[in-house]
Length: 151
Image (cartoon, rainbow, N blue to C red; front, side, top):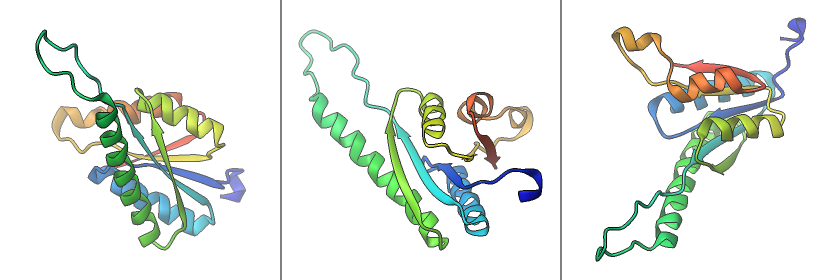
Protein backbone atom coordinates (compact mmCIF):
# COMPACT_ATOMS: atom_id res chain seq x y z
CA UNK A 1 0.00 0.00 0.00
CA UNK A 2 2.74 2.46 0.87
CA UNK A 3 4.18 2.33 -2.64
CA UNK A 4 1.00 3.79 -4.09
CA UNK A 5 0.72 6.54 -1.49
CA UNK A 6 -2.51 5.17 -0.02
CA UNK A 7 -2.75 4.46 3.68
CA UNK A 8 -6.03 3.26 5.11
CA UNK A 9 -5.48 4.40 8.70
CA UNK A 10 -9.21 4.63 9.41
CA UNK A 11 -11.73 2.24 7.85
CA UNK A 12 -15.50 2.45 8.27
CA UNK A 13 -17.89 -0.39 7.52
CA UNK A 14 -21.58 0.35 6.92
CA UNK A 15 -23.73 -2.25 8.67
CA UNK A 16 -27.50 -2.66 8.35
CA UNK A 17 -27.90 -6.30 9.37
CA UNK A 18 -28.15 -7.65 5.82
CA UNK A 19 -25.97 -10.53 4.61
CA UNK A 20 -24.07 -8.16 2.34
CA UNK A 21 -23.32 -5.83 5.24
CA UNK A 22 -22.10 -8.82 7.28
CA UNK A 23 -19.65 -9.52 4.45
CA UNK A 24 -18.69 -5.83 4.32
CA UNK A 25 -17.83 -5.82 8.04
CA UNK A 26 -15.84 -9.04 7.56
CA UNK A 27 -13.83 -7.56 4.69
CA UNK A 28 -13.28 -4.31 6.60
CA UNK A 29 -12.14 -6.24 9.69
CA UNK A 30 -9.73 -8.30 7.60
CA UNK A 31 -8.25 -5.17 6.02
CA UNK A 32 -8.03 -3.40 9.39
CA UNK A 33 -6.18 -6.39 10.87
CA UNK A 34 -3.69 -6.58 7.99
CA UNK A 35 -3.09 -2.84 7.79
CA UNK A 36 -3.26 -1.98 11.49
CA UNK A 37 -6.17 0.38 10.79
CA UNK A 38 -8.77 1.77 13.15
CA UNK A 39 -12.18 0.22 12.40
CA UNK A 40 -15.53 1.94 12.78
CA UNK A 41 -18.78 0.04 12.29
CA UNK A 42 -21.54 2.48 11.35
CA UNK A 43 -25.29 1.95 11.36
CA UNK A 44 -27.73 4.56 10.04
CA UNK A 45 -31.37 4.48 11.04
CA UNK A 46 -34.37 6.72 10.42
CA UNK A 47 -36.88 7.96 12.94
CA UNK A 48 -40.33 6.51 12.33
CA UNK A 49 -42.64 8.43 10.04
CA UNK A 50 -46.17 8.85 11.31
CA UNK A 51 -48.79 9.39 8.63
CA UNK A 52 -51.60 11.80 9.27
CA UNK A 53 -54.23 10.20 11.39
CA UNK A 54 -57.77 9.78 10.13
CA UNK A 55 -60.34 11.59 12.25
CA UNK A 56 -61.29 9.43 15.19
CA UNK A 57 -58.30 7.08 14.83
CA UNK A 58 -55.93 6.86 17.79
CA UNK A 59 -52.70 8.82 17.40
CA UNK A 60 -49.63 6.68 18.17
CA UNK A 61 -47.22 7.77 20.88
CA UNK A 62 -44.32 9.16 18.85
CA UNK A 63 -41.85 9.07 21.75
CA UNK A 64 -42.46 5.33 22.17
CA UNK A 65 -42.02 4.70 18.44
CA UNK A 66 -38.83 6.78 18.37
CA UNK A 67 -37.41 4.90 21.38
CA UNK A 68 -38.25 1.55 19.78
CA UNK A 69 -36.50 2.59 16.53
CA UNK A 70 -33.41 3.73 18.44
CA UNK A 71 -33.33 0.56 20.58
CA UNK A 72 -33.58 -1.59 17.46
CA UNK A 73 -30.80 0.42 15.80
CA UNK A 74 -28.55 0.02 18.86
CA UNK A 75 -29.13 -3.73 18.80
CA UNK A 76 -28.31 -3.89 15.08
CA UNK A 77 -25.13 -1.86 15.60
CA UNK A 78 -24.04 -4.08 18.49
CA UNK A 79 -24.31 -7.13 16.18
CA UNK A 80 -22.10 -5.43 13.59
CA UNK A 81 -19.48 -4.50 16.19
CA UNK A 82 -19.58 -8.08 17.52
CA UNK A 83 -18.90 -9.44 14.01
CA UNK A 84 -15.81 -7.24 13.76
CA UNK A 85 -14.60 -8.17 17.24
CA UNK A 86 -15.20 -11.89 16.54
CA UNK A 87 -12.78 -11.41 13.63
CA UNK A 88 -10.16 -10.39 16.17
CA UNK A 89 -10.23 -6.64 15.50
CA UNK A 90 -11.02 -3.86 17.93
CA UNK A 91 -13.93 -1.87 16.54
CA UNK A 92 -15.90 1.16 17.62
CA UNK A 93 -19.60 1.47 16.82
CA UNK A 94 -21.21 4.66 15.54
CA UNK A 95 -24.99 5.10 15.44
CA UNK A 96 -26.33 7.79 13.11
CA UNK A 97 -29.95 8.95 12.88
CA UNK A 98 -30.79 10.44 9.49
CA UNK A 99 -33.39 10.39 6.76
CA UNK A 100 -30.70 9.86 4.09
CA UNK A 101 -28.24 7.01 4.59
CA UNK A 102 -26.02 8.30 1.77
CA UNK A 103 -25.85 11.81 3.19
CA UNK A 104 -25.25 10.58 6.75
CA UNK A 105 -22.41 8.26 5.73
CA UNK A 106 -20.89 10.83 3.38
CA UNK A 107 -20.87 13.50 6.09
CA UNK A 108 -19.66 11.05 8.75
CA UNK A 109 -16.73 9.75 6.70
CA UNK A 110 -15.67 13.31 5.87
CA UNK A 111 -15.89 14.58 9.46
CA UNK A 112 -14.12 11.51 10.86
CA UNK A 113 -11.45 11.63 8.12
CA UNK A 114 -12.17 8.04 7.10
CA UNK A 115 -9.79 6.74 4.43
CA UNK A 116 -11.93 3.80 3.25
CA UNK A 117 -15.65 3.06 3.49
CA UNK A 118 -16.65 -0.58 3.00
CA UNK A 119 -20.29 -1.22 2.06
CA UNK A 120 -22.32 -4.13 0.81
CA UNK A 121 -24.66 -4.24 -2.10
CA UNK A 122 -27.68 -6.45 -2.49
CA UNK A 123 -27.21 -9.66 -4.42
CA UNK A 124 -29.28 -9.71 -7.58
CA UNK A 125 -29.48 -11.78 -10.71
CA UNK A 126 -29.99 -11.08 -14.38
CA UNK A 127 -30.25 -7.51 -15.66
CA UNK A 128 -30.56 -6.01 -12.15
CA UNK A 129 -27.11 -7.41 -11.35
CA UNK A 130 -25.66 -4.59 -13.46
CA UNK A 131 -27.10 -1.95 -11.15
CA UNK A 132 -25.60 -1.25 -7.73
CA UNK A 133 -27.92 -0.67 -4.81
CA UNK A 134 -29.02 2.94 -4.43
CA UNK A 135 -27.04 3.47 -1.21
CA UNK A 136 -23.80 1.91 -2.44
CA UNK A 137 -24.13 3.72 -5.76
CA UNK A 138 -24.77 7.04 -4.00
CA UNK A 139 -21.75 6.54 -1.76
CA UNK A 140 -19.47 5.73 -4.68
CA UNK A 141 -20.60 8.97 -6.32
CA UNK A 142 -20.54 11.27 -3.29
CA UNK A 143 -18.15 10.05 -0.59
CA UNK A 144 -14.90 11.98 -0.24
CA UNK A 145 -13.00 8.79 0.64
CA UNK A 146 -12.41 5.57 -1.27
CA UNK A 147 -15.40 3.21 -1.28
CA UNK A 148 -15.14 -0.57 -1.50
CA UNK A 149 -18.40 -2.30 -2.47
CA UNK A 150 -18.59 -5.93 -1.36
CA UNK A 151 -20.93 -8.53 -2.85
